[in-house]
Amino acid sequence: MYIDQHLSEVADNIRHHNLAKTNVAIIAATAITEDGQIIPTGSCGNAANFVEMADQVIVEIDTTIHPILEGVHDIYLPKKRPYRDPIPLTQVSDRIGTFGIHIDPSKISAIVLNDIPDTSFKMDQADDETLAIAQHLIHFFENEVALGRLPENLGPLQSGVGSIANAVFAGFAHSNFHDLEMYSEVLQDCTFELIDSGKMKFASGCSMTLSDECAKHVMTNFERYKDKIVLRPQELSNHPEIIRRLGIIAINTALEFDIYGNVNSTHVGGSKMMNGIGGSGDFTRHAHLAIFVSKSIAKDGAISSVVPMVSHCDHAEHDIDVLVTEQGLADLRGLAPRERALKIIQCCAHPSYRNELTDYFERACVLGGQTPHLLREALSWHAQFEETGTMKSA
Image (cartoon, rainbow, N blue to C red; front, side, top):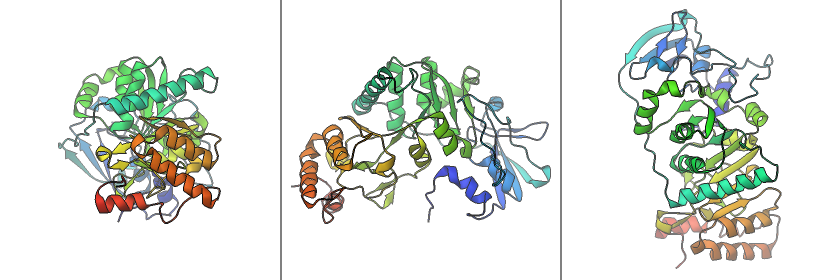
């Protein structure tokens, strides 16, 4: 029983009593300062919000994380409505809060020590498909800059979590772009690779999710990165006000998308959750450009990532600007549903499924409608996969 909620909304929903009050909060920390501030770990999450709202707080000092992290955080919490001010953040590198979390000492019921390291995050290396996706995106961005629609450094970038998005971002290291900035929820391996390569000048996030190898490199050389990154509360890293103000380019990963541009980023076969929606909805809905990437096929071609209708919809077609697979890039801006369908099939679908998608679309158009569908067939590809193990017709 899991509530898959937009992460930017969690703290505010507790603050304004749409969700149950926090009674006891367990807060991970690297240290407690002499003046009583809690210094978070490599993840801010909603820790500061929970400290503010909880009746009691247990502070867990993580002795496996180097205290050198002190000074990298920027803790700022919006006020409760109706007394809320605009968030005074206008640049990715702005600092508007404190290094630690202030707490009333009377709230602290216990301090415990933890010497068990976090589990590591496995990050797959880039392959031919993810490199092709990166090249399609880089070519698209180069053209946008040439047309004057984007600045030379593109503006702030956001990356979804996972191997595909990480590998796609790593492709920027081989581009002509420089002075890149990131305003994201999670800082992954690619963030520090781009800083090392001199391509990225600053990155703002809520947490760091790194592979073992990258984590050792980053923590061993953290002084090199300390003035180039900042970690903020999740409510701030994912806040729609800031996303819209900064004009962020959001690049997230889709499990599948349909011929009209609706995106499923969470549920395999419409029912089995692979991952939560996280902050992808926060960024997609409010981004200057909302981009989703995916390989065109999965399971050795048994699954098409481009389908007639998504089996679960996390991001509606109205919010999607660009879709990319290794086959190509579909720029959907300003296109009506029927135009979007043709573009997506032609540019993004794998050749082994392109004719079937075209056949479905053409037969649906005969029935008419602004967004034509054959309702008895719309999810037949998923049903066939459940029954036979492949979406391919006999």
